[in-house]
Length: 443
Image (cartoon, rainbow, N blue to C red; front, side):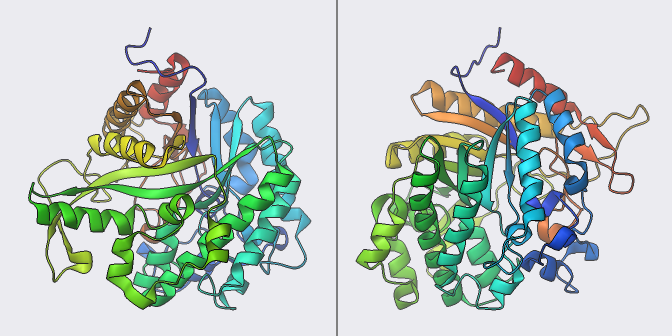
């Protein structure tokens, strides 16, 4: 019997994203995405890598689902590539692109695996970017139409849906810092993009209610434990400002109806106004919040730093992503989000990016560091559930090694090793361990 047992019905799975694993981005009538364009722009991706093939999941999905079944997965969180379904972002749909997801869902259900579908994991149709991208308010209507198309096509079988994966990332890193697609460096554009995404989310939720009345829908946020470097009032205020930007930018408007005051203080007129019509749209009730957690951020008060919060780098253990391994931060966020917003939670991503992984002489990949990372974080998740947090499931990131955005193929997050030359799949030590966790519903 497990020492740390999770509640009955707890959902164990893994997660991936379309552009990171599918390959064949232009196959069968699909249109290019902003990430296809970005990855083919010199100087944007480590070693000039692209996701033209990556894990070839588009052609090998049956093999992958069979492997998921062998690993005992109860759920699989995947994302739909918008430009596969609407090459121009709107207008005529591409039946061949939709058919891929139709087959994938049927394959998952036949294997006894619950599908969890994310509508948007960053691969915006390039045609929509050419019309202004997420800063263009018209994009909200196009997203809602695309969402409705997917609900209508898959909602009879897919009952768990996520509108957006990590809107902070694709708005701020994509339009503000420019290190992600589309590579724009304009904070005003990033804030407009965020507002459009919030409106798009609310419009999609409204359509979901009529089309999938027996389903559940939420949003997934990238979160870090924003903690003060000391116990001074100044550092605690700095941590609150940092949390407002990194963790609360998108959930506060959805649940509470407006942006965090700290964002108004920081960005002033650059931050779009929350009119009554927008508020009503954005505040449409959701069923759960997904949290993607990897690390914490310690900050101290510094009026010359962004947000008046200067990050501290502390001694400790770090992954190859240079992210501190801090499991207690997950417990802190689960407790905080549940106490603040009162909604059921899913851990929709959690994992360790490592370098240099390859099979040993016996063909095994002993990723002990990842195993320990997962175990320590699952222990913190159990602690939160034992204290009353309504946590519904845990999706390890990732099912398989994949294209890690601007890092290309330099970092590996998978429970399953992918040989990008031969496309051979090899479950790692962490996969065998996770299979036992799922079987036992605990550690």
